Image (cartoon, rainbow, N blue to C red; front, side):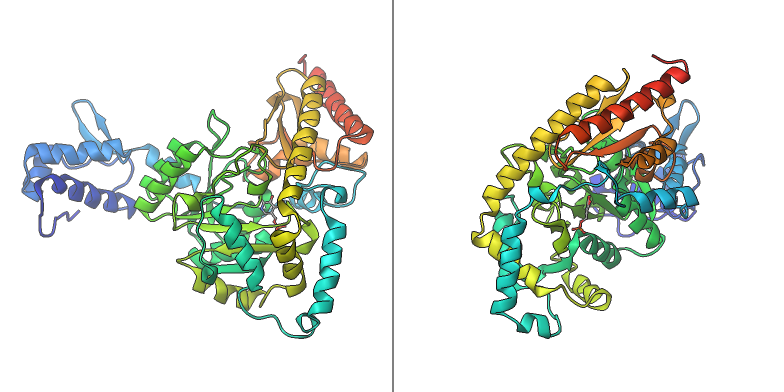
Length: 478
Ligand SMILES: Cc1ncc(COP(=O)(O)O)c(C=O)c1O
């Protein structure tokens, strides 16, 4: 290995230069995990630095988990590094069973516990229907001409105005209206990444996002949830410092399926570390407006201007209108080009209706009602799950949104079988295994509380609980 420091500068920066050289060699694969690193003496001679500086370089590598010291032997490339690399997985093609299960989530059923949205009564549909009619009448040309540009300007103005209240100062020129938040995410991934690039996601991960990453040929590292119920920040920033990923795709606010938001201080840390390492943050903030507390949580963009922020109205106004948006100062040109070649534009009348709803249609009053209803439905469903399911069952405690994440004792549940049995009874649930690239959530499932809380839902929860209890007893539990 040829190591040299060009134009040696300030004394105290030398150790950093040496450490970075060695890191680059490790990242490029020139130094394998477990390989011996040059001794302090050798490094000092090679770089014409003092023994103290050489030692500091090695200690820096150790602190950043690139190297490990072995007593009386010296420094070696950290052996866990390879594990991290292996973690960046190509998402395997779907097996037939998983493909079937994914196609059944959202298919017609009697009790709608599978999706992450609500009954029609949750949304101001009459008002929107009226506004849509008005849009068509006032601007018939919107129906008769081709759709061009980055979106309906009055809607962009409203999105920009609202963003100020959650700490984001958007420039309309960099805002693009999309066909739902899903299109926004897809454009953001394609604008910033190439097939084979590695992406960090929160685990469990929204299943459509996982499938999107797979279809784009991206590799994925699923970062586990920490004790506080949101992503393990230490593990995440470690991946950043090792340059193990190019991007972090986050549901930092009201995560799906866990319903937790990353606290502001942790967001600030993540944003700073991502910026230092040149990691792109792509944020799906579709549930941000559904947060139950008094204060709408700030998106990552409020902490790092480099974040690509994706939002939309499918969870707050009307899932059927398919209006979302993406904002990036840095990548807006690429996003707009990709939009042009993937769906050309976004239908104008729904944008007109939403713009009107946001400017003087009582969106805030509607949001207050929506959040209160969801919070109450979630609470009632959660209490029933805790009461009816076998001991050892854990249930998430969401800070917003529609869903609960249920974790059974591992031995109690084969969620794939439960999912099929439930569907035969007309009960839709979202099975845990579609939220990961492996079997780690085969004892979990997600429940939707958005369809209200009445006899039908209560009965469905009790039936699910009975099956799970029977299965646990059958395996010698309870
Ligand atoms: C996290 C997340 N992002 C995006 C979407 C979909 O957004 P849209 O319907 O606006 O495309 C969903 C829908 O469930 C979701 O859960």
